[in-house]
Amino acid sequence: MIRQLFLILTLTILFTTLTITPQAQDFWACPQGYEGQTVRVYNWTTYIAEDTISNFEALCGVTVIYDTFLDDGELVDVLRAGNEPGYDVVVPIDSTMYLLLAENLLQPLNFNNIPNLQNLGESFLDRARTFDPDLRYSVPYLWGTTGIGYNRTTLGYDITSFEDMFAADARVAWIDADRLMLGIALNILGLDPSSSNPADLEQAKNYLIEHSTNLAVIADDTGQDLLYEGQVDIVIEYSGDVFQIIDQCRCDDFVYVVPEEGTITDMTSLVVPVGAQNKVLGEIFIDYLLDKQVAADIANYTVYGSPNQLTIDEGLIYEDYLTDPAIYPPAEIIDKLFVAVANDTIDALFIATWADLHATLGK
Image 1 (spheres, one colour):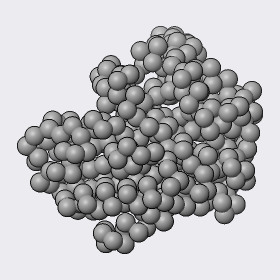
Image 2 (cartoon, rainbow, N blue to C red):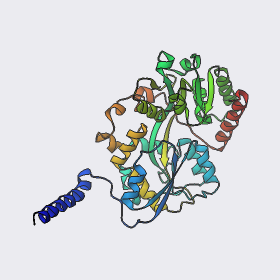
Image 3 (tube, rainbow, N blue to C red):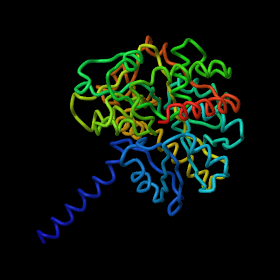
Image 4 (tube, helix red, strand yellow):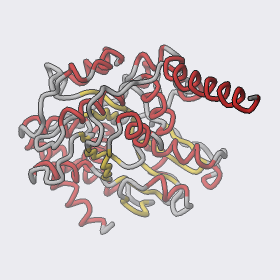
């Protein structure tokens, strides 16, 4: 009898715990009726928390096919070819959004399936309106800058600008991204970072060639790994990627800085492309990513800025990150940031100029 009473008491405690925990956590609840379905996601590498996908699968009883890319060009190629894999959610940056919308490669979203849109900050919704005026196709996901990561221990001093980087007696890696590198050069030269003038792009190309003395490699979106492994001393890389190795190292060796000259800022969006196999579950997945705790977990893991104002207001972002001006910049730094604008003419010009630079440098 005592053993039976003990078993009943144990089951009662367990049942109570299971039933009150979700309410106590106020965690996202999956709508009913999607069990056994599949959603296909195409995202950047290192751009989601470790348990984001597995938690969604468990909450909804679904399968997530999750693929990654290193460069937005890979994403564009897949969608232009007809989205053969049937991706339901993809994650382009600002400049790519112009191209995808101009080519009718995205589907309008049903925001009845995305009630957590209300969690986002108005300034980021306004930013999305620059390429999606009526906010029909996109939802802000994460944002950051492309700046300088370096090994302070190896270098022996701090750098604060692109000028410092170009002059350093060090091994430098540039990121293999035409809009980023040429845009940075155009900005330094006082020209439009999204110029469609071939003469401007020629100036930017020549500027980079003239300042390539310490260039060791033009790398895919892996500069942070080269820095961490000691193959280079300085990289031009996405902010979150550098902060991830800083967190991984748990040392004082690595530093990320927004250069004094200013730099590009990217915001990624969550969108449903044409050819999606399960649009509705894709929209449910987007809503899940906008949950305040899910968004916080992603931002805290990737160390990119979150546009989720509710997440910030409720103190779910690590304080060290929220107060770091390289992650959440103050107004005086934001004023020096620029956003890439794109169309077919600009895109083709940047790609061709970047190819010429590659050929000249042989990197």
